[in-house]
Amino acid sequence: MAHDGVHVPSNHERRRGMTWEFADLLGRRLVLWAALSVLVGAALLLLGDPFWRGVGLQAVVWGAIDGAIGLVGRRGAARGRRLHAGDLVATRREARRIRRLLWVNAGLDVAYIVGGFVLAGPIAAGDPFLAGNGWGIVAQGAFLLVFDALHARLVPDPTPMLPPGLELFAGPEHEPFCLDPAGDASADGPTTRVGPAALLVHGYGGTPAELRLLADRLAAAGWTVEVPLLPGFGAEIAGLPDRRLEDWIGAIEAAGHGLQREGHRPLLVVGFSMGATLALATERSVGPDGLVLIAPFSWPVNRLLWLLGPVIRPFLPTGVRPMSRLDLDAPDVRAGMEGFMPGIDLDDPDVRRGLLGLRVPISTLEQLFRASRAADRAAPRVDRPVLAVQGRSDAVSRPERTQRLLARLPHRPELLELDGGHDLLAADSPVRAAAEDRVVDFATSLRGPSPG
Image (tube, rainbow, N blue to C red; front, top):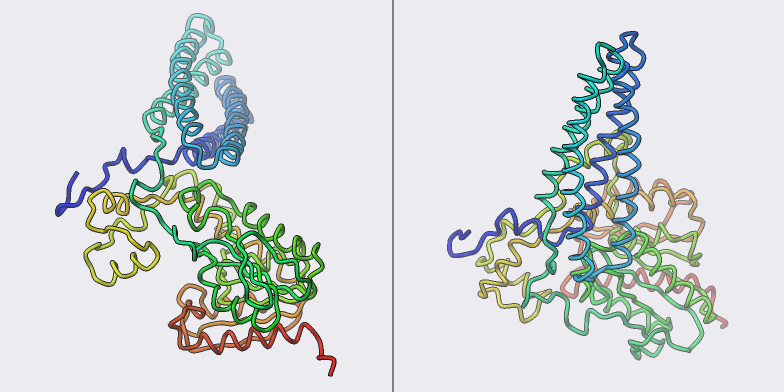
């Protein structure tokens, strides 16, 4: 389909590349149906009428079975996502398996419906309890027939998340790096020089490049600086849908423990945006001597929404298209795109189609909420010195949300508020120098008084 000369993805194209997400959503929907079936069935069993008790019995039995199948399916989707991240061949094989299984189940559902009619009619022979069981089987089979047939038609075609010609964060500046106190870079891992070390964690959608200038300042101040690339970001952005909070936490723990095993003391962890959220979430497991939270991402969700989440989630789509409404001919949009995708040809029809149809799974966005919740839970147990740096006009990590997060810390942290937005560390930020100066001063304070 074309719109003003630009191909607009069809509904079929929009579903591509979401196999594991689809499998998880399938399990969620089946579990929700199972829960409703068991609740309604339990209520019907309490009625004195034999017919409705028969219907209720089937609702409970089928609901329990469907719930177990849904949970196993979700577990398998999570395992497949973890084992086959980025493996298009394995993903295509799984898509075929899911589609085949759903059609086989649809055929069995027809048999269940026929069997239910037989039980409700000739076999029951006037027995209301047996008749109720028969009609209960018919009801369950009819729902599952619609469920299986509909979802069999909706199984997505596994294709790469990014189309050919669309390579994000491909430059060397986005790769992980380590600096020794002299400022010499190493891409192979930490240096062998023992002394104070700083672990810098980038934000969501970011790369080590956004922390390079701060890393240079800390290295010049005598710190070994390690800046890892979190799984699913940078050149691995196409595999982001297969990554979870546990992957990011594991990467931070591995980097922090590696620096500690090499004898680096003190250890400072600096996080930017979601990186600050992850720094809080891993404070207990990593055990740094100090934390720096720069524009910490916090997205509090009230308790009612957390309770309703499992009910609402099955009705949401598998993903969203954040770039679908972009005007790729607007100068500011083109400048922004070329900023983090150097060399991209925005006049190439395939590239434009890929950007407009780029679909981000809902579960990927869910990891942001999970990270925020993990930091929120960890905050009251933090017993290290903490420095927070916040922009007063930050529309991403809002000042009021940062204040709420900092209020959960057991000890009052140091807070530096600056007249800036979210990109406090960007090269062209007028407050970057002030933010870097305060971080270096805070890092120096962790080393104790100088010998002289």
